[in-house]
Image 1 (cartoon, protein in one colour):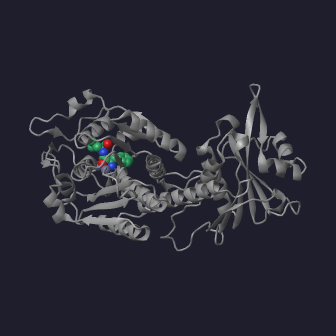
Image 2 (cartoon, rainbow, N blue to C red):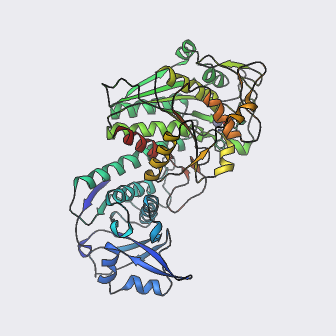
Image 3 (cartoon, rainbow, N blue to C red):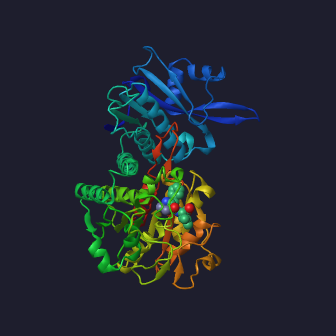
Length: 507
Ligand code: BES
Ligand code: ZN
Ligand code: ZN
């Protein structure tokens, strides 16, 4: 894909399509006026007020995600103009730009366009030009993502798809805009890499294959990669990961990726820990057929941290970051771990098992203990941890559990820039009561109520004194229906937030 900044007049834009944005502002209670800015206004006047006329007829209102196609038939150099709705003018932000760009790009992909130009409105809509450039390219590449490698014919495909994207930013090519464009494409590619990992079927993406893919990425981007095998896990006392792996024919792996952007620093650096269950059958506490259907996605946390590392390695912030990924299947084989078992985690704590389907906290317990032992901080884990968070927040928001208010604020702020939403969840002392065990240090689960918070309280036992955040992405990691801006399947959620967070910490 050829991506570049363009600085030309609207009438000179060539290629298959020019995408411009249109917002609305409310006048009175029931009427909305279309708001055209920058390139959209130029198109409108070059075509004799056509967009406004169409809007007055009620054909196009500027609502979020709405699309209008114009065929200027020789009046402009470009073959078509797509007007994409941005919604209420005062609510336009990075997330709106991201979605609008993704929606338009997907539409163009499906309707035979190859060379497209995206106009970047900014000042008129009160958003920073560089941020807008980043959001548009990120959105376009995110929107164009598909996962069709196992289909012989990509049904609905239309030739080679989009081959070049120009960003019409209105001003001369400045270094800041070039940087924003690069950031946007790196972050989108890292997100799509994570989506690929999650979308792979579980017979292909085994723990060993996940380790291979992480290793290949590390070689490509110049990261250090170390893969611990079962024998090494035994030496280290990783009783959680080893127990979950017992019932599976596939060997577990513990993936370590190291990025050293501050080799002189005395601090260990940031730890990103991802839950890597490549298939969660529930183990002996087996799931129903329906619950099991999407459980190849239970390594979404792992995919996110591996994806984020690729972006970090490409963008080279001056800070150290380590990704830790305990990965295994959770299967009900003859040697599977059982309810009633007591496990010893790497940091020495014992845990009484009462449901083998609560396996995520066990593998994370070893991952977090490893981070503490290496002196890493802050520690951020990402996990498809609980069904409870899906009930609470749906597919809209990721649950954010954090033992430090500053870290919590930083992650929410990074999420705003990345266009990803986080909702703060509680870690109050009282939740601890339900995870007491009579015969071990803690009990694995705490009943049906507040299951996400109690799972987070379990994790807290393994982070020592470190600043720590836990992102429960069980609801946001995957959508099982198509959206105008997003292919059905993996979302790559948190990749962009994590990368943005790391970049900010390095500044
Ligand atoms: N992988 C699941 C959580 C999950 C549910 C992810 C739905 C994505 C969508 C996790 O391992 C699990 O099964 N959690 C149980 C724990 C319970 C048995 C204590 C849950 O939350 O229901
Ligand atoms: Zn489970
Ligand atoms: Zn799970």
